[in-house]
Image (cartoon, rainbow, N blue to C red):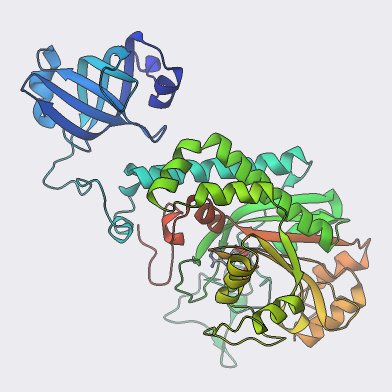
Length: 466
Ligand code: ATP
Ligand code: MG
């Protein structure tokens, strides 16, 4: 039998018809023996959630020599007749005529023996967890969402932009960058009491990007509509279920968009993605709806069918004031909204996604466009029930002098951002954009509680090993 004749289990199960000879490869999920005459193997090859049931008649030639190697976790290839199954739970089954073992999985040592393992346990074996139902399903959903993101933007004429991972500008002037250096940390060259970065690889202090936005703006000022979709790094010490040190961010940046256009695009994107994943990953989503969170399907349908609520930051503060709820962090006009506040507004007050806009100038970065009230900027955050913030965006300041003033107020050197100011000096245009945290999206779609369980190899404080 040639390898090219191999069929994926997904295709076998969806074609739904008997076949004289079929060749599959995959990993044994379970083995059950019956009366010493037959064995039932459940085989999974990752192509879909479902397993293929293989009936192994103990009288076939290849049974005897392979029998002791056929355990949970072993990798096999099977040739057989695909027939309608008399048993419950599956439509088709494969009656094996030949079985071969590629790799055995010693039952005394292979860790995935039970049906259910805790996610904490699985996090310690990130190299094996994709072989579980949950992590296989997360990966397939993650894959589909990535593809759908590209489809969404490509269909609308946006260009996919690769922004740098190593950068010398810190997007928000926040001190949460990982440093990139080839200096010897045991004997760093010191000049005037400070590390001498002129001797470093890039001749100046460099780090891993916290956002591709500023570079996105450069290309939006030439190609009109662009988007980035790449890894982002933040050295913040937030050990929450919604923060990673390395995560993927989707950042569209559009010339000729104002804040309202920006909010419309964010809403349209989310609705598109939920619709797409419901049609392409329904088996996996039904699995999550059953095993992880019984409200997922209903919530997704709600997102597709209902307009998001939009309220200003000032209105949000009023709602929180009137709530009579005691929050861990108190709020007053001018303070940052914490996740508990965001969730209260979307989960309790409106019970649907909410976009909050026009935030106080002091709590937002320098590049956001000021409103005429002199107090607020054209920022917006999209909040989802049960999750909190999933998108943060804004209309960007396009006026040269206003931007320069705001940089001064925030103690940023206009020399460092000369190129950024140039975008306003030469052919400036109104523009806007946002950042969507890709893992938060996968979290919301799958209902997975912890963000560490929706990225293949999570990086968090004190944890960057496999
Ligand atoms: P938060 O307040 O939750 O830390 P933020 O205001 O720092 O978010 P932005 O800088 O606006 O977030 O980034 C845009 C989006 O990126 C966020 O809306 C969120 O979805 C995602 N995001 C931000 N930080 C992280 C992180 N550490 N891990 C995973 N996703 C993140
Ligand atoms: Mg943050």
